[in-house]
View 1 (cartoon, rainbow, N blue to C red):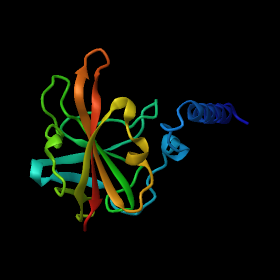
View 2 (tube, rainbow, N blue to C red):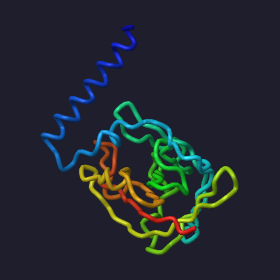
View 3 (tube, helix red, strand yellow):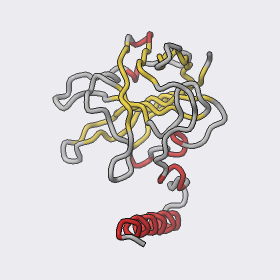
Length: 193
C-alpha cells in the first residue's frame, strides 16, 4: 500500500467513525452517509444549468458550479450577483433535488441576488435555462426558515421521488462575531414541464 492510499484509507476510517459516533450522540440530526460523504458528480445526462430566472421577483442571473469545502459544507458563490448549483446533486429536470445557493447580501450589507427571495409566493415559477437551450420550469410548493443549527439536511439533499428544486439563502439576524446569519430561508419546488 502506498503512503497516499494509506492516508486516504485513514481519512475514510476517521470519517466513518465520526458518522457512527455522531449518530449515537445526535441520531435525529445525522443524515445518511451518502449525503454526508457523497462527492460524486451527478450521474444523470441532463444538461448543466446556465441561467436562473424568477420572473415574479425579477431575478435573472447566471450559475456557477459548487462543490464541498474542506469541512464538507456546500461552497457558496464568490460573486454575490450569481447563484451556485450543487454539482454533486441532481441536474435541473432530473429526479432529485436541484440545490441552488445565493447570497442575501454582500460583505458590505448591500442587497445581493437572493435579497428578495423572502417575497416569493407559493405557485411562483422558477425557470432554469440549461446548456442545451431548454428550460426546466419549477413551481414553488413551500417556503420556510430554519435556524442554522436546525438545518434540514435530509429534506434539502436527501432522495426524493420527483424532480425538485431548493433555493437557499441566509435569513434571520447577522452575527458579526460568528460572521453568519442565524437562519436559512429555503424555497422548495417541483418540476412542472
